[in-house]
Image (cartoon, rainbow, N blue to C red; front, side, top):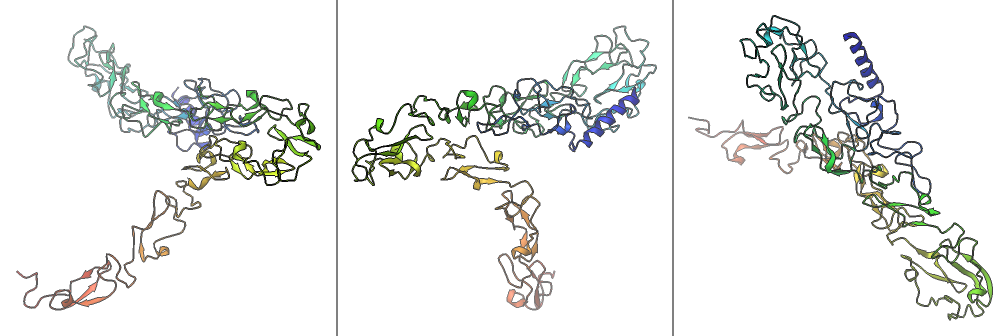
Length: 548
């Protein structure tokens, strides 16, 4: 049994490393999935839902992270871990946690217990018993086999022989307990945080009902303990934000975390960022347009429309070739002409003719005439701005624009503060604030890749990557150049000492001076390598300051 256990553990660990999981205790990606699912768990794979134009992103059809069912690219969902366990990942005993983005967090797996080494917090490990025996633990025991508990928290005395006096409900010499008599011992007195201590039939203490949970220290098999969260937050656990807490059983309490804003549609959300869970304007009863996701993760169909389906719907004068039986003459143009339909499903009378069109005076049924627009403008016609003109005595709105009305219209990426659910991160940047320019296109000037270790546009450096620069390339003589957190050079460790000029903070630089100029009687003061005066050759006549 021992050999078989070692073989399975070795195979699991070997599989783990072959798949590229280099940080065993913090597995977040599908490379650590024992169920064999590839890809990156936090992002959608093939078949992911998108907008009306057939975009991509989010989860596949039918997948909803947070519904308690592990589906598609999800490594887990709630308490559904499939076949995944700490041991299946090649780690020690413990409890896996499912993050808010349905990926695995293995911080609760004990990666040290079972390695045959006595690590901090362990009483024993495998066959390593620190010379302890049944007799040293239970002095009254004739002998037996002492072993180590599977979680390395205490000795396993169940195979130790029963003392002669054990079982008489009296604490005899060499017994740790007897029946219900525990000799005033508790789990806490045995070094645990909580639990129930009992007495084994061989009069030794059974600590299997004890737990380190509650001692305020992260022990093996725990993901948290009280205020100790192991550096984890709602964000690192796959949520958009909130306050992470620790439960009484030393597992993460996600009640204070929120998923809305993490870019993945979770249970209870209609959408999240660009993830609409396969929903489009079409699935919501419209013929075209783009869905929007609100800050509360609700779907908004404000930019969806039925214009373009060939049928006259509410608010439409026409639709494509369907003019609803109208013509130029039917609209009052005595000169006739060819009536058309705008893409906005309103009449286009540009080719309709009025008998008096061209006299710069608006007459029925003219909308305008030459430069006479009748006081109308792009704004008065419902646009955000632009230049209105007149063509064949009908308004020409080709110079008008919806950009600036706060709604995402055709050809726009954004509009004012409406970013259509996008952020710097959604566009591939690490951090920053996404903006919208005057042409309703994304302004990524406030986005940054600072922190990825690569020197990008607008960065002097990034982390330890100084892009080949040092103090000398910045005009200093020497010292140590570093990088600020905002990816600009930090020259605080550089200096100018040695350039032959006395700069700020220097007393001298490579020169010497007669000591009498510095208040001494004789000698020559030289400049030290640190650009301070060296008075070693200076002195006073008669008695210098070192006389006694």
